[in-house]
Length: 230
Image 1 (tube, rainbow, N blue to C red):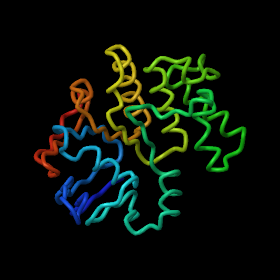
Image 2: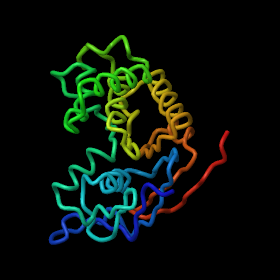
Image 3: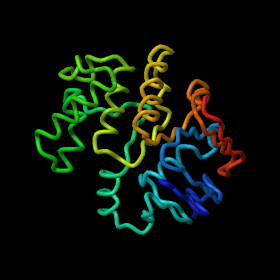
């Protein structure tokens, strides 16, 4: 079953001045349970494609379906609700709320979803244990290492039970040990819980773990390699 499908997606910045063609007709399908890396040189369109799939940016042309819903046709308010419930994000810069504890950061989206306190607490404890941080739940981001903050970000992304996780350069600010730990967690969640992950990355360590590698060059898919499971 497809969780993401794009058809003829184009993105042009500054169309009325000096146009920059970030994406040039991208046709892509991601199925449930994939562990996919989108790679390519700087300026190839990786982050733009992730942002458009995630509804954080609008295509100039084309169609994006997420779980069978054409998100290009949603109003801004409906798109916000859709992202909140269906798409999890992990960013390079962690983007944790500094005044909240790790527990509160993970709970935050569920609070916006109006879930009960009991459900929020149970889900948070489950996820913090899954990412190996059950003993750090009451620490603020400033009291955590970069690797620990990114693991909290993964738990936060998973909290609303999204259809998939979009991870934009999630290991860029991490050392080798933290990167290995984070990728081990993500690979286990993918394998055991069938969570779909789509990465935008330059990191060879992420690329080596991916079971599908999509290469973008000048906003177009140059190659699409599906690897056999180890």
